Length: 191
Figure 1 (cartoon, rainbow, N blue to C red):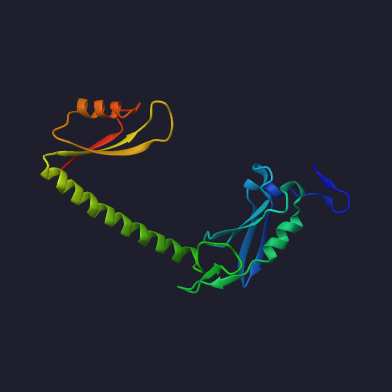
Figure 2 (figure 1 turned 120 degrees about the horizontal axis):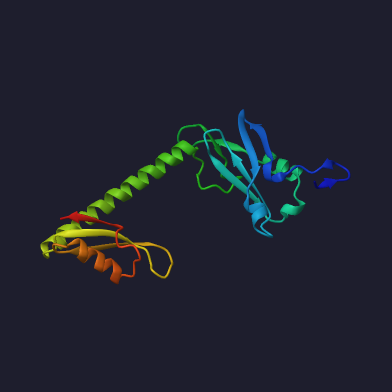
């Protein structure tokens, strides 16, 4: 076990969890795994609010090997909260922490993301319906939605192709020509 001569045993920062009340709200601090996983990364303290909101403070100039519980505590002591600009619940203060929540609590931020995603999905569905109608007008009868799993490795990627009266053999042959090692990962959609 690592020890310091003056302060006694050094706590295992990998498992350290500190809590502090900030404006009556419990904030929990832990050390992020990237602190010890990546050489020269520095100390990164993860902060959590009840309900799951997360933020982090990256103290690059403090090597993990030299970091102490006091460093984590000092980081936690610097945390301030604000009221969510939409509902008033506790949120991390964006003036102090580098967070992408823009002063929103986790629930309001998640609602915003869900709404943006739904709008994006609706827009994509309209575009696909228009494309399907155009391709049907050209004589195609089916849309094939597939994933290509490259024979020689690399990332899988989606493929969308139109065919007229395709058979299973036609579809699999097309996926094989595209270099996929799995010719069964597709969905046939009638137009």
